[in-house]
Structure formats: C-alpha cells, structure tokens
Length: 119
Image 1 (cartoon, rainbow, N blue to C red):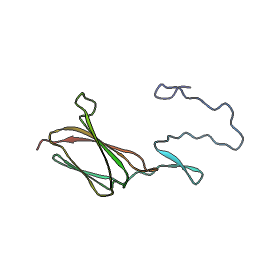
Image 2: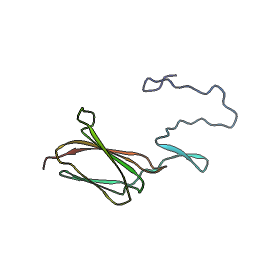
Image 3: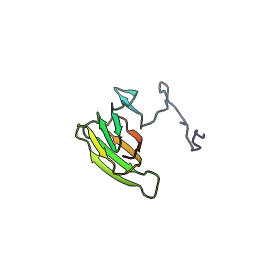
Image 4: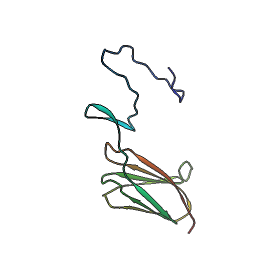
C-alpha cells in the first residue's frame, strides 16, 4: 500500500478481535491513560522587533535550536537549554532564521521561520 508521500505502508496481516487499528503519528500523538491522545502544544509566544527575537512561555528543559540562513551553504546553528525564563535571540544582520523548540515530553516540537529585518 502506498501513502500520500509515495512511501510504502504495510497493513496488519491479522488483527485480533476487539483490537482497533488507528493511524497516528508519534510526533503529534501519544498514549495517555490507555488511549491515543494528541500531544499538547507548548504555549510559546514569539515577538520579533528588528534584529531581536523574544520567545516567551518556553518550558524549562526545552532545547532551543537557532539556524541562521537555513537551507544555504552559509547555514549556522546554535543550541541552548531553556530555564523557563524568556529566550532572547539577537541577530547582527538581516536574513532568515529558523527556530526549533524541542520541549520535554509529551509537548510537541514547535518550528518558527523568521525573517530578520535590517536595522
């Protein structure tokens, strides 16, 4: 069986009585109290003013990855662990930036693409 991305998906050969097969994605779902549930999203607010980016609501223990000029040969990356206080990011020059927040389980990962304006 082919999925929408052209990859191969396999259907179960035998399903015991009383077992329901449901489609899920580990990046957005998990099992809570014996049932499939959607992983909650962190309540992160992002504010961009010129070359400064401020992330509020980043859960303590999250890994924040900043990629400058993603998808180019000039791409550079920086990671930091969040301590629960707002995360401040400064950019020296205009350009594109991708911010990836990987919070503690079971919260979902958040990705933000930001354009840095000239000062």
